[in-house]
Amino acid sequence: MGPTADRAELASRFRAHGLKATPQRLAIYRALLQTFEHPSAETLFRRVRRTMPSLSLGTVYKTLDSLEAAQLITRLSGVEESARYDAKLEPHHHLICTRCKKVIDVTVPDLPAPAQLGAFEITGVHVQFLGHCGDCLKGERI
Image (cartoon, rainbow, N blue to C red; front, side):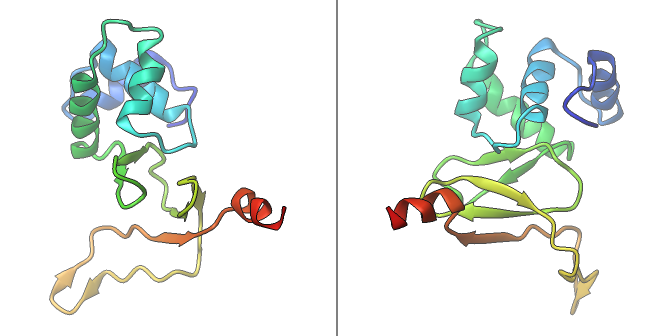
């Protein structure tokens, strides 16, 4: 489901995952679908609050927890102190700049994803490549 999904599509998806389609949840999820920035809860709060002034930061956190539990989004950790969120569910990985904290989606098609390692069944793989983005590298050369 892309960033242009309408309210009915989003509500249907929520119901399919056992979630009520509240205006707050819909607005937060839509904001996450409309960005490639992998925002924090605080960033989402500031964006959504522009059109929904009564929104609380606690509601954003609870909504993100609910969306993550329903597997509609993923939480990225290790980027910075605050968790960052991603609504792109297609298999992909992340390039993370350790200087500016930018997160870039990347697909590495030949990266193996084993179904099992020993007696451990693999249910998902999240790979994060750490380094320096092009913008930060350009800044070094100046």
